[in-house]
Length: 159
Image (cartoon, rainbow, N blue to C red; front, side, top):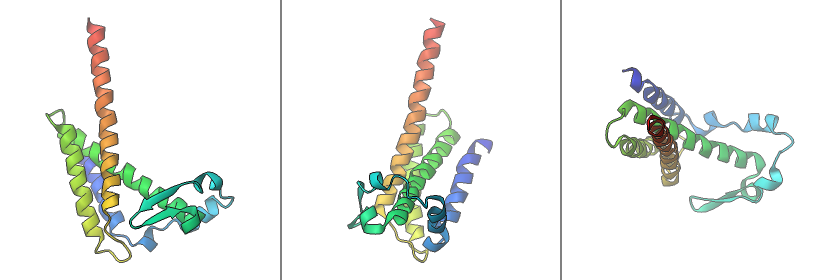
């Protein structure tokens, strides 16, 4: 049961956060206080991110909403990366653990987006599922590569 703990904690955090409305999750007031001088505004103004049927940019949304958008998407990426790692480590060193972790996380992301569509002020987004799955692929991929490198290093040390 201990090996499933990280996965379960991540799922609980996901369920709580996706049950919140956009207004409950908004960090705009904090960003306005924390980033009052608008650091990196010039550099961020160059970014234009296709999202849904629009382009999200500083010009289109404004500095603070754009930064919040980036933070929200980064949170998706990291959060689902952690879910994938939790599932990967819980699955153990069994065959196809990485595939199961990534596929399972993509499935969880789809279910979460569907569930989120019933939350006021929130919408279902296939692009968020892609961001979530990318987080799973990168996080699990890094661990798999790291483990292979360590294994190769140990084998060379034994020779």
